[in-house]
Length: 239
Image (cartoon, rainbow, N blue to C red; front, side, top):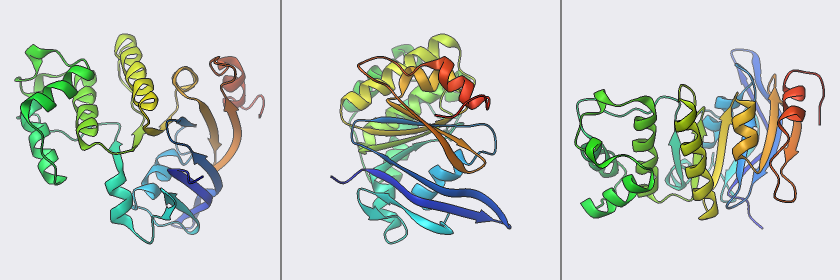
């Protein structure tokens, strides 16, 4: 069975420093995999290799069974990427932003389709014609997720997606991510938030110093145990 996302002995050296060292994991269709680690652990670098922005120094990354190095365009067409700070235009409203970025991606959507996506991410109707410069970070994230929905990609990469959000917005975001996975999307998120990773992910991989040092999985419908993961994150234990 081909995994939508796979890292095989992934290594990355930048300016003489080992950023990633033999990282191995695979993410299945409809699964949420959280790569958990502190600052500088190698989380975002891992995402950037899947997007083809960083070339592995050793090993490889695959998207839908094909090496990213051999066909970057195919990998990017299969992926929607949500950075920590969504790059949307503040002088445009939600509709204008979505129309513009869909056009850049070679796609189009009618107003009813856009409204359906914005409804799904719970962006209020009254906010949709306002300029994004008036939006909270949570509202900007919702707009960016709506863009990912409209692109209809099978894979979603999330880089610190809940950083700076309030607790209500975080819960709403987690519910949305779970719904996307239930609908068949493959989701790889990187985060330093132990609690959030355990709440939303089917599996958590703990990365430290560019190496995967722990792995945790939800079992029997239960969430991953936060205390166990926190202890490993703090260096008091390794799974």
